[in-house]
Length: 413
Image 1 (cartoon, rainbow, N blue to C red):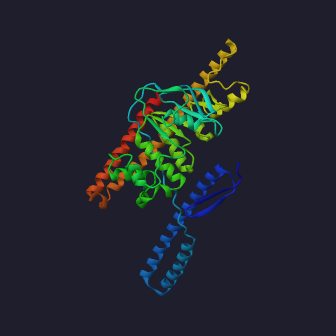
Image 2: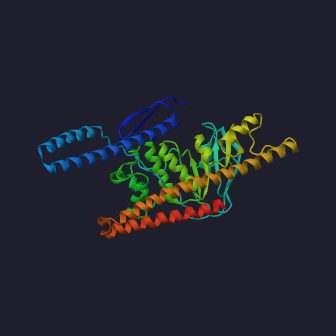
């Protein structure tokens, strides 16, 4: 939509004359040019400094004049030397799973909810299977958050029943973040929830979510929306649940954090049921969609583009979860459509997992290489405690890499 983009980074505002895609490309191009200029100028300064040193050693009048001239040249070059701004700190994480669930994960049958005489929804049925990425869409106020609170037993319904499958552990992300305690510090918000962890483990986890140093002593009530979201996501990650109910998890997150969340959810081995209005996010992750409107839900196979395509092709179809076909031909057409979309969704998911896994392996291997180099530094290798800490980090990183390679083997089979 946009034709101009403003970026606020490193305390500076930069204007780009185009949309977001243009901004991404232009920023990368400008940064590459700036890096080359800085490196070339630095090399030239060092070369001229060598000449100055040589002229001074000869120490004749002509040599002294040459050295002074070269020093002026160095000063002029230094005035054009601009250090390249650092990029925002990388943010990455993953959602581990403590237990493997059964194939039937979550089922709701004939669910209904009303505030007094006001009915919010009725006869809502859902069925979530192991490993699925299912999205719940619908207009504001239709009852999506209410349904989620019913599913995780935070709110009672007026009708219907909910059943969880074998070994299912629910982790819930509340878009209003009501579970956070404004009076607590960031450190104790996490530590009180997971008292079995040591302070070092808690602070290491917080550091991975960009809370470092004195940041851990900030009050939850003083955090920005994005910082609060990161704390809530960290607590969810540490729960190691195998079913994630996520209510608008990308709200308040900046682009880097959204991409990190997308990567983590793509590699997640559990099951996801999510409310979102983020079309890009839905397209990247969805296997199925439930659309809630007018008090009921309709099921669609595929991602957001598939959802839009099907609704455009069937404008008069009623909002029943499993609409009864008018005749055998319609039933066959619907079944064929579902099979095609399920196959396409499965292939998209496989390709997406391959792409993200390969990218994550490359990133982790680069980090592991840098970590191994750090351990060879004299000031590190002589510090037993530091070496033990870095060795554990390296082992954890290698374990993640091995897991991703194992996942790739399965995906390529």
